[in-house]
Amino acid sequence: PAVPPEQDPRDPPAEAPVLLVGAAEGRHVLLTAARARRDPTRAITLFVLEQRPELVARQLLFLLLALEAPERPRPAARAATILELLGSGRLRTGTAAMLRGAAGRLRRWVTGDRDWEREGPSDLGLMKCRDRDALEAVLRRWERAGPVPRSRGSQSVPEPVPGPP
Image 1 (cartoon, rainbow, N blue to C red):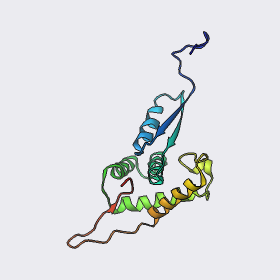
Image 2: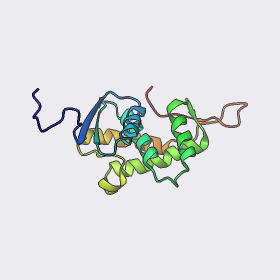
Image 3: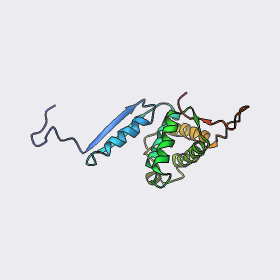
Image 4: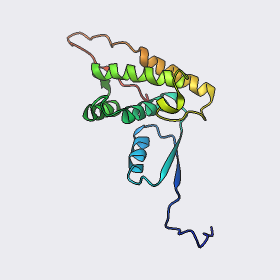
């Protein structure tokens, strides 16, 4: 298309909308957001299209952990937790407890018990009610997940990581 002479084609627009379709792993959202911080003059709006509520919940969990206040928990511990959730088949007890707490915060935010603009890691305004209900069910399941029973000969068995089957 033709570009007006007063607009330099090398100058990027002030806002860049990005659509992630079927981005099953939250790392894509985190990576895009982290790269966006390199150029603070350009605002990036991420739109995520995902069919499965488990994957949406997982992405929201990673966003919540990445965007939490620096003192809660320390950045190194938070990074270790995110890496454990991304790559592990089982969770340690401390990570499982953190997951239950984060799932509870996200569930309260999704159901509207909190101020949508200040407390949540993203805007769910375009999400349909049935999708929001399915997301709430996933978060409630994560929040209520109890400890995994011990197997014979083992002191403790880590909890399974929530995510795609």
